[in-house]
Every structure is written in structure tokens, then in C-alpha cells.
Image (cartoon, rainbow, N blue to C red; front, side, top):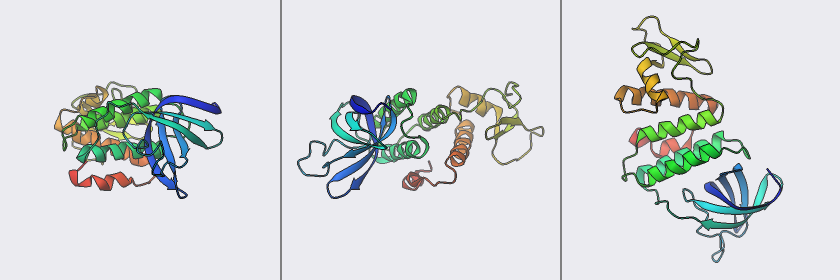
Length: 241
């Protein structure tokens, strides 16, 4: 990242925690610089210009300066247009923020993922209070894996052969889909070829695809999280997500 001052950079706050008596340490996801760490000096003081602006799920323009691993936040401006998240959409927001915190390396730009994240927040903001399309979550998870270089090959098996819709496959991490010769094989994490093809087209309308895609993505994320448990899963486990 260029050192010096960065002005008016589109960004979202992923996480904050208190620092000393009056400041905040902020993890933000920026459009051109990826995930960054910022020190918001005095942000917890009653009359701070930053107080009330450093909040998750709202589009901001941030300006910062400095060098090293933690930069100094100089200014924040709210950009508006994003409804507040409540209920299940709020829990889903915590979930995708935690994924970004755990998986994105610092100062690694992902502008396409940033745009996908912004669209995801808008969908969550305009969702009915307790209704969230799982298709949006699966789409975001797949986009995140692809941006990290872990993209799924869904239309062809590990040998490069086209996926057969009515066959069954076992998806092996970092290898791909392996055809199960015996259609009755109950191998763990087996799924239909049709589910793989539906996922390739970002189509999660069929109940079987919806269920099998969730199992596959959860297994992949668990692998790349290297055993780290997500705190957000406990927040909305009651909804079965």
C-alpha cells in the first residue's frame, strides 16, 4: 500500500474494539486497498467527529495516513443509501464480516469482492426482517473463495470431463468433483451433478441444490478457516443457517 495519506476511499467497517481510554481500533474493508487496520484516535469521546460514524454495514468514505501495520484514521464521511440491518439480516451481516476478517489478508485489494459485498449488504437491508435468500449467501461465499484463489470447478470433474446432471459426485477439496461409479454410493458429502451445475449458474432454487450447496460450502470454508470456529454461527444458529 502507498504510504502517506489516502483520501476519500470507499470502505466499510468490519470490526471495532476499544483501544486505551478513548480510541478505537478499526478493521475496515476498502475498495482499493483491501482489509486495513486503522486507529481512530478519540473516537469514543462524546464530542468526537468520528463518534457515531464508525459503524458496520454502512457505506463510508475514509481518509487515513501513516505507515506500518496500523494507519491513523483522519476522517470518515457517511455515504447513505444503506438501510439498517435488523433480525436475521443483521446476523448474516455479522457472518460475512467475520468471513472477511478471518480469510482476507491485510492490504490485499479485491475490488470485485468489494462490489459484491456492497450489493450483498443492500440485499440484506431490503430483505424482509426474517427472510434472507440463501442464494445470496452462497453466491457471496463462492465469490469470496474465488477471490482468494480457491474457486470451485463446478461444470467439469477433476479430469476435465463435463458434469453429468443425473450422476453423483464427491467433491474433493483442491481437486474437484470425482464421479461415484455406484449411484447408490453414500459417500460423505456426495452430491448430484445437477447440484454442481446449478451452483455453476448461481441457481439455488431447487431444494436439493440448496441443501447440498450449503453442505459443500460449509466444508470448504471449514477447511480454509483451518479449524477456526466462527462466532457468528452461534448468533443465528437458531435459524438453521
